[in-house]
Image (tube, rainbow, N blue to C red; front, side, top):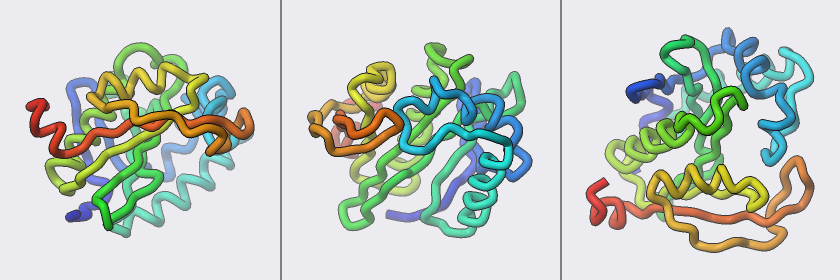
Amino acid sequence: MNHLGTKRLETPRLILRPFAEEDAAAMFRNWASDKAVTKFLSWPTHRSIADSQDILEEWTGQYLEDTFYSWAIVLKELGEPIGSISVVKRDDDIGMVHIGYCIGQRWWHQGFTSEAMKRVMDFFFDEVGVNRVESQHDPRNPHSGGVMKKCGMTCEGTLRQCYRNNQGICDASYYALLAEERDQSGR
C-alpha cells in the first residue's frame, strides 16, 4: 500500500476534504448532535459544540500522518460538512481498509453517502493500492447495508454479538470488495 493521507477528493455533488477545527459548529449542527444519526454508531451523541471541537482537534493533529484517513463530506451547494467518512481500521499486511461513515439525517436517502463511499473506494483501489475495502453495519440499520451494496460490496456474513454500539452489544454484518472483483466488474 502506498499511503497518501487524507487527500482532497471530489464527486459531482461533493467535496471530500480534511476536517478543520472551524467545522465544529457544522459538525455539531448537521449530524453529531442528532441521536437518530448516532443511534447505531460506536461514539456518543455530542452534547455540545465543545464535544465536536475536541474530536476535530484530535483529528486535525493526525492529518500529519500519511496513514490517517478522515474526510468531511461537504455538499458543494451548501459549502459545509454534512457528514464524515473515515478509515476506522486498517491492516497493511493484507492491504485492507475498513470504512465507517455517517451523514446528517436531512441528507439521508439522496445518494450522498454512496457517492462519497464510491469515491473513497476508488481512491483506495487506484491510488493507495489496497486489496480489500470492507465495512460493517448493525443489521437493525439496513440502509447502511444498502450503501455498501450500492457500492458493489458483497455481504460476507453476520457476526453475532461481536460489536458494541449505542444500542449495546450487537451483531455486525460485514461487506467487502476486493481489488480483483472490482477489476473484473469494470467498476
